[in-house]
Image (cartoon, one colour):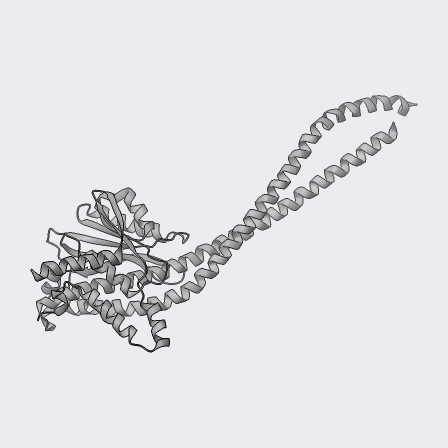
Length: 305
Length: 77
């Protein structure tokens, strides 16, 4: 008796309780479906990105071995060239009013972590210490873009097309020729590049290339029996050597940094894929559960009537 | 000591590049191909900057050749 009396009230109550729910459900359902779609789309795009980064990592790895071999060879050029100046104890001329030329060796390609911005930061630090003492030559588009924002007035030359392949000595020679054609006389040329420490780390440092005057003033210069005329050649050659060294080492650093960056990117993408897969499954599950609940309650409700 | 290539306005690096090219070309066929691939100059472009503005892009190789020709003219005068 009680139950029968109570039931209409309950039914009325439950109907009242259900009615807003029924109205609300389609939007809720739509929202659920939409998020499900969204998650699916995102999952797909992340999967594509991880495929790309994985491929780039493999490409960088294969290029890295070649770049490292080239770097080892180029280091010998640079070291031999530098040995001459070590023996002669050549030092940077301090008192002269002439400017120093700063050659920044970056490349055209990005997606390799902080390689280029590290170089730019090092260059800016040097420039800030002696603001009126430097002119800049930039190799590669990346550092050009960065340095042209802060030190555009000091840039005298920029080169692009670097970093597509392992740099050759012909490249370094051509760059050195164009640099030595500059109208201003520089007391010293500094070549700023990323030094390869190991596969994970690198550090921007500068190597010096001196002009004739500085070379002839070095204390142990008398040890070498050479004519003054040859010094011009020596300077040009030493600059090319240094550039070649810097370009080759910078290239190796860039490849290894790209490999690491792509490795990290792939790892992050994999992590995100896992997360989104779980989220996707859970959402799908809850949508199905929600539908089941609707069907069952709907069936139960219509049975009673 | 006077250098013949200096009189022609050629820099030491250019001289080296020419000499290296000659050596590469006189190698045997199989070795020559490998050496030429190694020694080839990549296509580089450069631009001169003045007062914080970038100038026109020029091809590095042709610009170098042109500059050398100009230098040769100055030297012979």
